Image 1 (cartoon, helix red, strand yellow):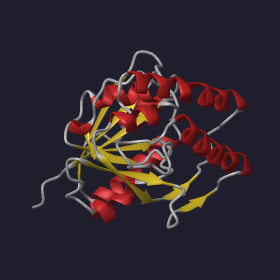
Image 2: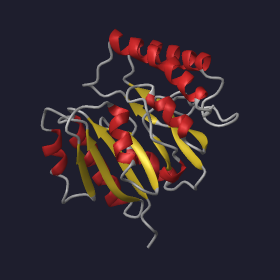
Image 3: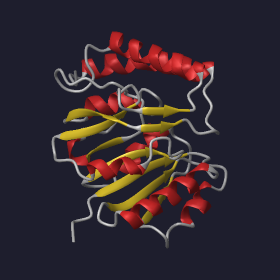
Image 4: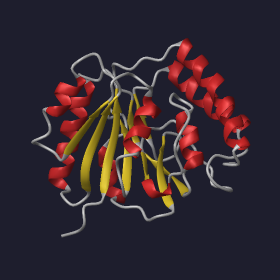
Length: 237
């Protein structure tokens, strides 16, 4: 039997409705591909709904661990907590299953020193349910990141889509701990990853239940240059 390699890491905050659908999908994947997933780690980011209860329902159905944080600390704060626990190969996914575990059918493993990042801008990607507002924000933010950073990653290794949640890598290649906890965390994470990052096509569905407002957009645009300056000052770029 092939060694089971990958841990799926999901940060969840008030995802009582969407997280169970994602875990059911992972269960189906494991049934079809029993030699790919080591475990699933859900880090609950201080949810106030039934996210934890509904996640624990899957303990006897998939190899699952649930880490519960006492208070909400932000997506990348929760992911950092998960990175402190896991080892080996890790796939970061969102609780809404926007880019699903099924992308592993074509990859299944990645060697040390390399990482695979999903890209919604890849010519072979299929993106569904994206509103005009999200499209404008996505392309605008991509352009903005290019202004704030000479490059993302190491050397000439450029990332098409820093914000795509689908990221496969070896945790041993990650140079933490992170400082950013919000949207700029995706960029800081890429810069702290000592690996050659490969852009990979994804089937991406914008699920109902997620919201994006002007306050969120403002936070993205303010935190990005702050993170850029911090990382340059600390010689990560």
